[in-house]
Image (cartoon, rainbow, N blue to C red; front, side, top):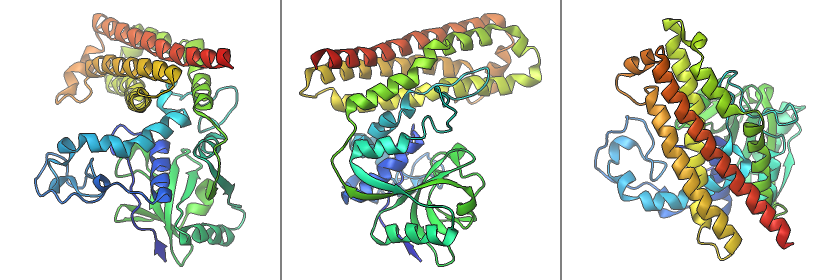
Amino acid sequence: MKILDGVIPYPLDCEVRLGSVFASLLTVLKKDIPDEMLPCNNPDRTTGKPGDLCTNCGKCRMEKHGKCRMENSRKRAVYGDFANEYAFVSGQSLLQFDLPTGVFLSKIGMPLPDIFDDTVDFMLRYAGYQFSDVNLTDKARAHCQISASIDRGVPVLMQYKKNSLWLLVTGYGDNLELYGYDGARMAPHEKMDPPPDSYQNDLFCASNWHENARRVVILGEKCEPTATLADAIARNVRIMRPIFEKNYYQTAADYIRDGRHFKKVANLRGQAERISGFIGVPINGRSITAWFSETLADSGNPKVKECFSALAHLCSEMHDICWVAWHAVGTYKRRPGRYIRLLADPVYRDMLASVVEQVGKKDREIYECLVNFLGAQEASQ
């Protein structure tokens, strides 16, 4: 049995899971774990729930480290850089989904479950690493390949079939089981499905991984990156384009205004959760894009600086508008029942729909900012 030490699962709030997994992997590969990610030994208590991980260091328990988050907000940005960058590069930070159907924008010209099948391939080309897929025909052989990577200190990327969830495998056992991070502590809605055998010190322990794994990727040597920032922006443009081609925001506003969906009081809670989910996706994603953009806003390249300075402002503004709509359906309210019942009121829903339309306009500005950057790049070549 062997489990790698010093692996940090992060970021710990507003995360896009694939970016978090990738950032954890790169932190291990670079062998450069910042001090702020190590236990902070702050004895003060907090309002965080017992068992929650400290949002500064990523390892300590919230009940022991009350001042950690506030005093280290600047440091948090440092260790969040990897995660924010690769959430953007993956395309997941600019996603949206269709409110009436609840389907994410995962089908962009091809029936693929995780935006594109080449998402991780692209991220590895952008990061500059050779990689190979594990042959999953035989469990023992696959386990041998995975354990060999762990033995040389390199965690392994694994994707599950059922919900396309990406995991970080950081250990193995003598009975063909695997250990790693699935985000259950940080994102309970993104647990492994089917669940692992158990959790041990925040690590899943799974013996059923072989029948449930869709893909397992092992990293090789560092190499020259073959994908650029412009390539990543082009991917994001492809991912965002259907939002406007299919009028997802206007469709959502029309759905909210349509009283037929809100006739039965018993259905209002479900509709509130549906609307909250629709609005919550860009709240998280656009804020991540804003954080990443801020790191490039001081770039020496004037085109990069112009684009990402604007993008940081636009994404922050959209995040704030989204919050107005999110609060309007009772999210994070102590008494959400009153807000949920208001969904039966057409005047209330019309105001909510109007906010959603404003969010859509802001998202189009974000999209056009990316398109203009690509146009400027092409014109200069």
